[in-house]
Length: 138
Image (cartoon, rainbow, N blue to C red; front, side):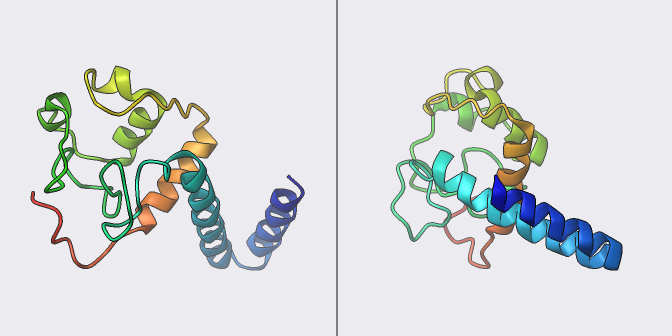
């Protein structure tokens, strides 16, 4: 908490000095916090990219990707048939209640209900992109 308070103070000072710098600083902080939360909440099963070991599909390029499209991953029928595109709103709904959002999926329910935690994880997920989407078939 002490670290977050200090970080918040830095962001407030940046807002006074330069709104553009503040936006950049705040986004960087959100991504860094999101990576830590991702590592504690999501990394148990999902690698950020296809090179790491992963029980579930890797989450690089997840924002804007269709659900159930990673080659060589055995998705549930309900997820593959969902037609969902992983927008920030869809990812937020999934994080909060994946069983309620798409019943019958293989992923155990995680239940990240705190919107701030969701915001940070979404910021991180939006930052993990690769140029090589060879593992994706859309």
